[in-house]
Amino acid sequence: MGTFYGYMLAEHNDVTMLDVRSDVVDTIARNGIALEGGAPRKVEASRDPARAFSCGYMFLFVKAGDTLGALRPFAGQLNPSTPIVSLQNGLGNEEAIKAALGAKVPLVLGITTEGATAVGHGRSQRIGSGTTLLGSGGASLATLQIVAALLVGGGLSASVVYDIRPHLWGKLLVNAAINPVAALLDRKNAAITDDRDAGELAKSLALEAAAVARASGVKLPFPDPWGYVCEAVAATAEARNSMTLDLEAKRRTEIDYINGAVVAAGRRTGIATPFNEAMVRLVRAKERTRDD
Image (cartoon, rainbow, N blue to C red; front, side, top):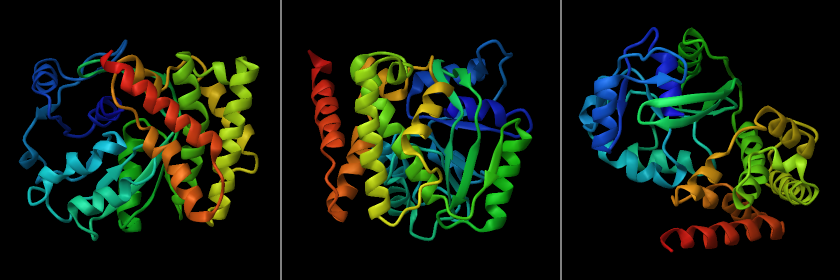
């Protein structure tokens, strides 16, 4: 998603892509970034955290499990007034960002229903248009509005909400229901509604997550959790979600920050989550086969 947002923002803004991988940085510096079917756009590329010191806004797209490690090198290298914009999956990113950069960091938390997948270094394929919702994790309303305007100026749909946490939980619920089921089946998201047994399992995962959200004092932004999951499947039916791609590539997934987050919150609130716990165990077991 970082390449996709970088490409959209680069039409009217100076963009620097930061990555720890030398081959990625070299390719982007040489070729720019591009969407499939579109002309490349030139951006800066670097591995040096100090390059971010004077940036106006820093967008964060790393996986939830990498948030703390990715941001630690920026401590002391980033202007403390620079807003951080997190459009990441799962729960726990806010805490990790503040642990790395300080509790007073001007943090923008968001969710997006935009669909894009990487097809090479600096290249992305858009697989569905959506919208981005932004809320405060410490940033001012003025900052939220500026970030929304940047995204809209780049051709994206974006808006500010008063409380982002119900929407974070809503995205978590969708990911918890769709991602592990499709990943373990190694199929596109359409499998959730095409296959009766896959659908029943996904529905149970969604209803568990909804029960945990309610017990946590979160009012979800939709009345019917399963209906909302089905809408998300319809919008991304031909997509292979990030967990599916991670297992295919033998990479570590975000299972601990998606279904694992539901399980952890269920334990805190006394809500049983056997279906989500089963997904955590199955995906972890699948991850351990990556070296076989």
